[in-house]
Length: 148
Image (cartoon, helix red, strand yellow):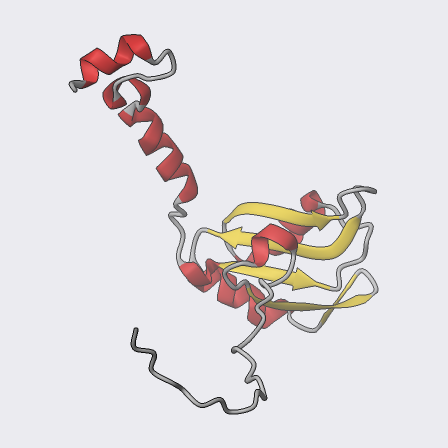
């Protein structure tokens, strides 16, 4: 049966070229792709809860051009969790900020700066894995071939 014959009988059916616009796909793909080096994003921990993104932008822009600053906030209270991600446009700028600001006093608290790893953005922590499969201590059973 030809595709053009299916279209009238199924109201939700449309030709693939009509439903998928190439410009929309490239737009979504480009928004998911980061044009920055992998090690150009840092995570800053143990920030004072009163610290805002503008304050971080001012303090950390001394090391280079910042593309984005994101504070991790509690979903219910919208209060800062004391963690922020800073995306630099250059990997060298991120390394300079890491070396300079790690374990420094920042408005009364010692902050910790490190390179952000993949998976940190979503939930503020690395994805949890269950680890390698556990070995079950089952009794050995005799394998019997069945011939019918």
